[in-house]
Image 1 (cartoon, rainbow, N blue to C red):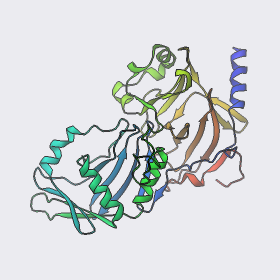
Image 2 (image 1 turned 180 degrees about the vertical axis):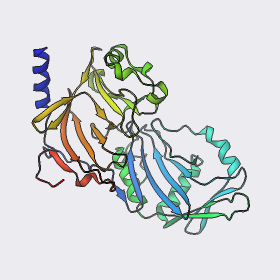
Image 3 (image 1 turned 60 degrees about the vertical axis):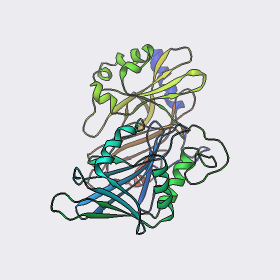
Image 4 (image 1 turned 30 degrees about the horizontal axis):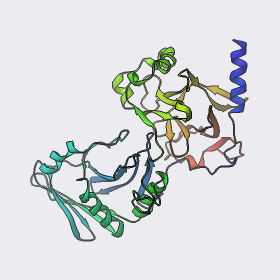
Length: 365
């Protein structure tokens, strides 16, 4: 027991690297470009989205692209308003009609679209835009336009609703997607096309069931009784992934126990090239120095950077709590940065202003 504790303490102390040590760090929150926000999921699927409200009606327009080399961009529309069984959904760019789609036809074609693994749609009624040439035509018009207007058909005697979606910032958002998925200069880029062949983007493999875990990994996971006490349906929705590593090794980021309303615990398990598995502990800071922790809250894997982020929310708003970022170094997860905010006052979350606990800075909380 003493030997294990000593090893754990040495590992924890070694797993600390200042965030400024030789690498540029991404921000604590995904960037935005005017009215468009961008982000990627644990698997490497990325998207650019614009949320626009017109009176009581809102629409979310989302351009989604998976990590596979052959993956094409998809367009997803979600709205909070009820849509009739018939009627037409119309898309205009700068006053020119791009497409007028019968609602009934649009509903029928949804089964032909396979959503990327790890994609989580918003609540409301959502549709995938017709794929292939139709999507290419729409995106080309949007890239060069100033405003996309979505005409929603009326329900009953209500008036039709036109929701304008500003297109400023869209091109920069799509360029971010190209860069993030390592497609810039390839034939598969959306904006920055080149002559290089398409290739897979940095990615991880979704794990939607505990049954997909190798026996050695499952043994480590189920050894913690709380980990295995999770409903299979809930497990499937928590974006667990397997990260392929060198020499056939894999890092598993998997949920550990039922989530609360605001926080979901995860563990990291390393499966080596010999098949043996072990839990990977992570370093956190305390008032007395570094400590080792088993759990990672609201885990987000960033394939492009080989980094893992934890965001423990102290309230439902998320304006207080603990935020960590670790980097995979080939054998473990090294703490690059930790920040915290102890004041839970209901203000909008702004992680960029949270006080650093690693590397230590004399910043006010």
